Length: 113
Image (cartoon, rainbow, N blue to C red; front, side, top):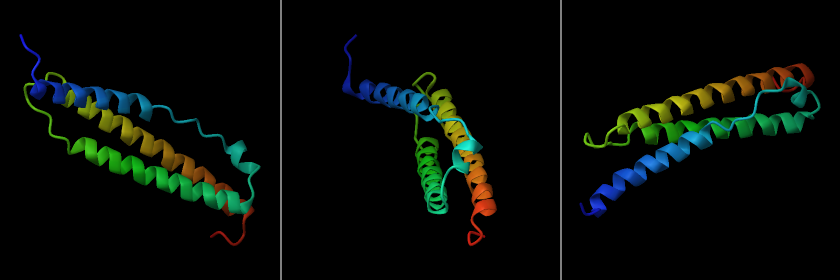
């Protein structure tokens, strides 16, 4: 059987989705003590960085969710769902992290309401 270029595309797509799955699971744990040592401007930057990460992850999740996987690609939908679920879990972790940062900022920085 010859390896046709049309069959390479779905295989490459699957490999990319698997790679994205592995990369999306490398989120650090939330440590409130880390934020206790930050200044108010650093906390503001951390809130902005976290918001940016949430947006990027949501965009990536949307792209994965809207990817059209051919029916003949076995396991393609399962991979797509797994990647989307991992991205959703990452968004949840980032939102929790952002809540910790905001709570710390609210306690320490009176102007940041």
